[in-house]
Image (tube, rainbow, N blue to C red; front, side, top):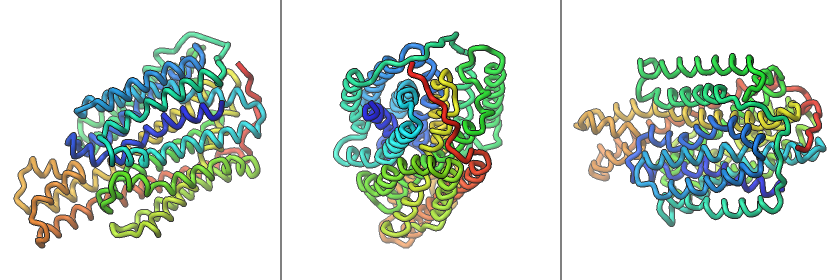
Length: 502
C-alpha cells in the first residue's frame, strides 16, 4: 500500500518541476515572458495549494481511496489537454486544472499512511519514504522533462502522465483500503472561499509585482484584499463548530513549527530549481535533457538521506534535525551567491546541490511527523491538508518571490545594456521580459563583433546578478526559519499519539 501511495505522490510531485527544463523552449515557441514562465510553473501549484483543504475534507467525507481514484482519472484527462495546448492561455488553463485534480490526491496519501501505521517507529519510517518520494519527484522532474523535450515536442512532458495514472489507478484498486472520517459535519464553503482567495491573491500580487511595480496602485490592492481574506478566514474558523481548518491547531508549537519548516524548505527548493534549470541551459548551454541530468545529484542525496533523517529525528529529536537542515540549506544557497557563469559543474555546482539536498532531506520527514502525530484522530484529514498546503504555498511562493527578485534585477540591467544599440521601446520591453528574448536580440548583432561580445556578456552578467540575488533571498529565509525551528520545535518528534483506523 505504501508503494502504491508513493506512486501517486511521485506523479503529483513530478509535475511541480517537470516544466522547468521546458521553460526556454516554451519561451521560444510560445513567446512566453518571464511572468508567463512563472505562471506556467505556479499555474499548477496555485490551485493545488488553494484547494488542498477542500481535497482533505472531501476525502474524509466520501472516502480517501474513492476520491483519489476519481482525481487520478481527471489528472490524466487534464494532462492530455495540456499536451494538446497551442497557446499560453490554453496551457495555463490545463495546468490549473491539473493542479486542482492533484489537490484531491495528495492529502489522502498522507491520511492513509497516518491511519494505517499505528506503531510510532513504523509510522516515522513510512513518513521518511513518503517524504523521500516527494523530494525525489521534485528533483527528477527536470530529468524526465529534459529527456522528453530532447526527443519529442513540449506536450510530451504532460502526455507521459497518462500511463502512470493508469498504473496507479489499477494498483490502488487492488491494494489500498478504503478509509474515511466517521465524524462528519457540515461543509465549510465560506472557509474554503476565504482561504483560497488569500493564497491566490497573495501569490498573484507577488508574481505581478516586478511588472506592475511593488507599490503601484495595481499591486497594493491585491496584497490588501489577500490580507482581508486571511482575517475573514480566521474569524470564520474560530466562530463555527464545523471549521474547514481548525486554526486553533496552530497554537500547537509542534504543528505550527513543522508547517513553517516545510514551507521554508519547499520555498528554497522550488526557487532554486526555477533558476538553476535556466542557468544550466542559458548560461552553460546545456540541452534540456543535459540540464535535467545535471540535477540528479540532488535526487540521489534526497532519496538516500530523507528516510535517514526520519530515523535521526527519532533518536535525537526533531528540533535538532530540522533546524540543522534549514541552516544547511541556507548555507548552500549563500554559497551559490558566489558562483560565476563559468563555475565548474564537478566542483562548486555539484557541491552546492549535494549540500542543499542534505539540508532538505533533514526537514521533510521529521516536520511531517511533527505535524501529523500532534493531532487528534479526527483532525488527521485537516492536518494532512495543512501539511500539503504549506508545501505548495512554500513552493509557489518560492517561484514567485525568487522569480520576482530575479526579474527585478535582470530586467533593468538588460534594458541598460541594450539601451544604446538603437532598439525601440517595444524591442527593449521584449528583450527584458526573459533571458531567452534578450539572447534573441543579441543574436541579430554580427557574431564575433566587439559589440556582440559586449552585449552577450552584459546579458549573462544580468542573469548571474539576478541568480545571486534570488539565492540570497532564499538563504535568508532558510537561516531565519532554522533559528525559529530550534526555538519552537519540541526536542522529541512529538507526543506519540496513536491514530485510529477509520
